Image (cartoon, rainbow, N blue to C red):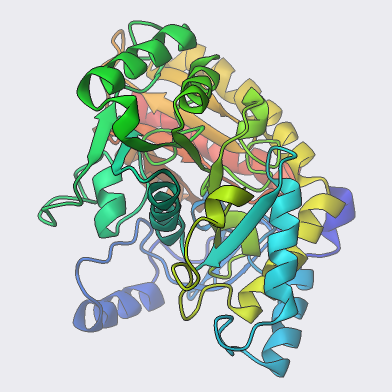
Length: 449
């Protein structure tokens, strides 16, 4: 990472000038309460004014270590100079024409890039949107049009978004679904492979056969348009299914004319140590949904997949006013170039080695870490009550709060709220990463004691 150090505008260091939140953040929080809907939550009560590399600077001058990357969005950092320059140059030319009215080259270039990067060497097409949920909704639309079927299968612990259809696909009720029903019909939920908590453990083939049996009994293959799954579940707890689970589902889907959709909104773009999480299992989805890390922080999402599937939709059936915005497309092309040039997939693997080595040693010491899992720089620490596998969300919340008080931004997740998730920008330096880990380790020790 030495070669990247010269790119950073801000000192890559943790600096605390006030307690957190500081007085300016408190002032903004008061303004927010009077102006912003109460239903919008923020996990960290400090207000950012700058961010670069692995740090976020707040309005009180505190410099925090970023272990969240805007929920896996700022993979290349929050102000990468190449991305910023591409955004500025495109904004100076035009910010919008609507691709459905007057198209432009960068939309086509992003589609070409995604067609080349995503798994499989078959002929592909891509379509661009604004958010991960929008990509998921459109992937389901494509699958239903192509197959002439209605039913869709999602899995336990899944998270696919907050819109009406994606809430139906999402498993967790609070805060995502409570009070917002009724939801879209013809969505069915099947058991996931969750090796830490699954009686089938590491037998992914048996776990897949369990789900397939339920699909055949409850729905029937001839009524099923699509199976949608996160190759590594995100909000559900960074759950890595047992080997063979995904491939067995893919094989069954192929045999039965069912569209297999890989939701790589959180796992995509070097985050797991490869371009996509599917690559680790060697599976080739029919459709793949993407967002988050695609464009260096600009809002962009995509569906890429088999040409015959995407081309089955009538002209005008896909799109949206802002989908594939030219500024976001310029950012994406720059961000993807940075990922390739700086081998951020390799960096994700190096981060994994560094983090898991330290946290595994800590697990033996504290007795509250049930499992450390994940791939690349997508790492989970599942916290449990000592001597049991019972989830401990109270402990998890306390650890995140203690880390923040010392200037490290930590996110949590999991169906039971008992998982710490680590998603640092892939450009974070080793020294800053180690310092953040020390703070996290101290927080876990103190909370466990």
